[in-house]
Image (cartoon, rainbow, N blue to C red; front, side):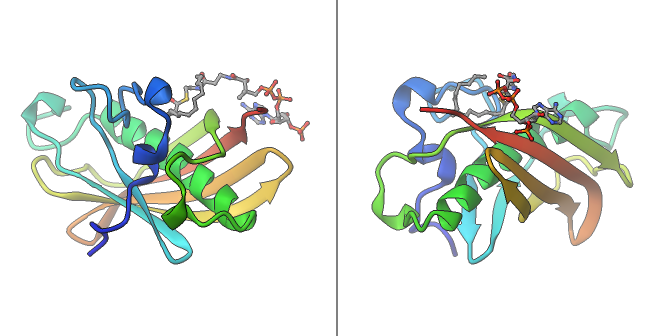
Amino acid sequence: MHHKRKAIQDLYPDELAHCYGCGKNNPDGHQLKTYLMGDETIAHFTPDEKFTAIPGSVYGGLVASLLDCHGTGSAAAFACLAENIDLENVAIIPIRCVTASLKVDFKVPTPMGKKLELKGKLRSIEGRKILVDMTLSAEGIVCATGEILAIKLKD
Ligand SMILES: CCCCCCCCCCCCCCCC(=O)SCCNC(=O)CCNC(=O)[C@H](O)C(C)(C)COP(=O)(O)OP(=O)(O)OC[C@H]1O[C@@H](n2cnc3c(N)ncnc32)[C@H](O)[C@@H]1OP(=O)(O)O
């Protein structure tokens, strides 16, 4: 459904696209891809067994990693929206964000091998501080929620 438009992380410049969680230029990383859909963001990831915590469930560090990268990607997208920057028409995203703080609540074990769906919603933008609320679900069940404070980098 969202494959025509580009992922936020694919709009990072090549020299900043090596992030283990979401860099398109890191062949060993997760290469998470966040899409802006209306006023929310979405990403998908299907973990394989090397990310096991206990058999059948996903390691919490991976959950945090996915929320981290979905959070910064979402923050950059929401900041662009707020500044009327049309992401359909840029080759490089002009706003970059890094994680200052990430909170994860693990609600139920995240099942192994299922397609995970991450969603993000903007809570607030205050100066350089962007707060995004997130969920990570499997088959419609929220397994974890996340809250990120991303900081817009100065030029
Ligand atoms: C790593 C380099 C990347 C290079 C650019 C690439 C970008 C495009 C590619 C993206 C790739 C994917 C990224 C994946 C997500 C990561 O994994 S990023 C890696 C993990 N994060 C980091 O390493 C960040 C390390 N921290 C820092 O660099 C600095 O602390 C920060 C976050 C840039 C902030 O420093 P600063 O620019 O000097 O800003 P500062 O004035 O301290 O803080 C700004 C405001 O935020 C508040 N604040 C700061 N930290 C906190 C906190 N922890 N809790 C509450 N409030 C806070 C401050 O109080 C301040 O508030 P106000 O006074 O304005 O109300």
